[in-house]
Amino acid sequence: MLIVGLALTACDSSDSSTAKVTTSVPLTPLDQSVTVADKDGVSAKYTLNTYRLTPDMTGLGHKIVLDVTVTDTSSAPFEYDEDNFVWTYPPCGPIKAGDLLPLLGGAMLNENYTSFMPPQPLRIGTLQPGESANGLVIMQAGGQGPYCLYIDLDNHFSTPWELPQQ
Image (tube, rainbow, N blue to C red; front, top):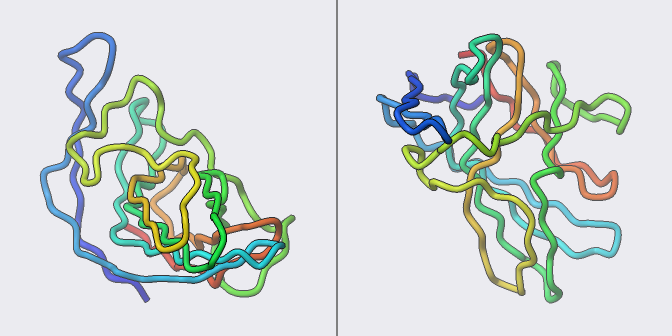
C-alpha cells in the first residue's frame, strides 16, 4: 500500500490567460516502480515518484497529479505517451481492457503547474536506451479515491499502483 502526504491546493488566477495551481504541503516520496513491455518486447520502467489529489479548477471534481519518471530499459527506442495511463476502481488486480477508464482531462492548457515538481506535464516522447524522462501525468477524477493505476502498452498491462483515498 502506498502512503502519501496531505496536499492542500489553491487557485491563483491573477493572470487572466492561465490559472496557477499551487500547493502548500510537500509530498511524501513514493518511489514505486513497475516495468512493462510493449507488443514488440520494448520495455520501460515507470516510477511513480509522488501522488497528489487536488481540486480541479471547476471545483466539481479532482485532479490526480502524478510525478512520473519513465526509463527505457531495452536496447531499442521506447515511445511513451500520457495516454498509456489508465485507471479503475479497486479491487486492484488482473484486468482486461474493458475494465479500464482512460486518462480523462489531463492538464488543461489554461492550468499552470509550475508550483509542482517537476513543473511540466509528461506528454508524448521517445527515449533512447537508458534515457529517462520526468514529468507530471494529470487525470480528471470525480471523487477522492481510492484508484488502481495501470500502464497500458497495447493491452500489455503493468501491475497496478493502488492510490489511496485522500
